[in-house]
Length: 170
Image 1 (tube, rainbow, N blue to C red):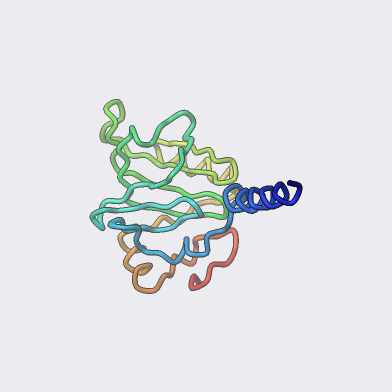
Image 2: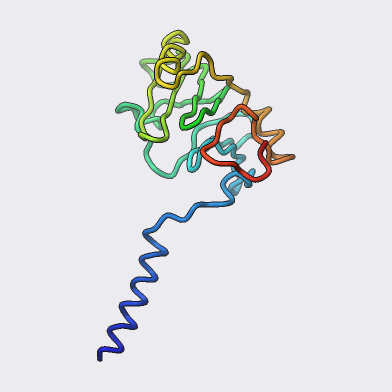
């Protein structure tokens, strides 16, 4: 009886390790596609994706908090993207949500706090990253060009700061 209990306890402990302890994904920065979706990794687990190879949008498997805004309601199509140490910036030339239709937006997402800010003017966005991250201007890239290089070489832009070195990335 005692032996059976110890065996069950061992099995449960092993299963808990596999299901509840996060295991770093070594392939996050190495895959260019997920199924039919082209993808560009930003900071694990955040990425942008494209079904067409030209229209990009944020793809995540958990909610992203942009100060009470659900990004799925906004119809954001991304035309430029940048990555800093623990944050990324997405620019949408034309938000599709009715009350903001046609307005340009900059989305700054802080990966440490899991909170983002939305700015509808470039000056506000630049002031925020300067104050919050001590950066005067973050270089934003066309995701189509980033993907073309990433697809061929698995290299992301040099300026994209990552929390730790990634194999095959400069």
